[in-house]
Image 1 (cartoon, rainbow, N blue to C red):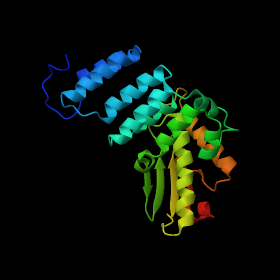
Image 2: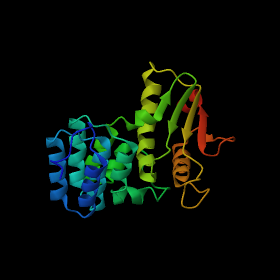
Image 3: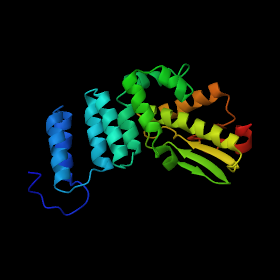
Image 4: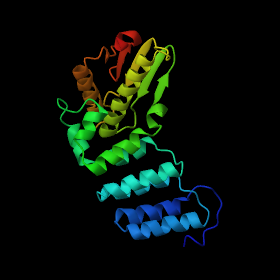
Length: 235
């Protein structure tokens, strides 16, 4: 079927993605890989959307080592990671999804997090933190430093938050980066949560802020944001 398709675009068409998804959901990974190989043989380029389908398929069957291998393939092929890439990976790591439910004891640094993980889970985290997803969600200019967590599942928001803290500390200590007048962290107020008005991401960020003794507080005019003066947060 794939061989007979007419090449009309550089991206895999919907039908090929459907085949990949169908085989993947059933755990028929040999067939899934066969479709992917034929897709590339006839000239279609593997992209982020198709890669995320593959990652979700491996994750649904707890194939963490396969997920790590696929992430390496994406990097080697210069395929961009997306928020959905993060969501697919993080939702497939039970130790991490369990950690973020225990807000009083969730690790507050990437190093501490990795000490709580097994080898395959650590490899996945290391692959993710080397991507550009954080920078895509981060705005940094003299007036504002803003991180937007919209679209991120709980475990994804947690890892991005740990990365953000690293970036803040690095930029504050480097001396060559401008300190924004205001820092703003957008986490949402729970409009799209299973329980309306109760945001798991907001609860996680709030607890992390308290434990880190951060100067950032919930914005009085927007309860879905944490704000703080840049220099106060730095100090």
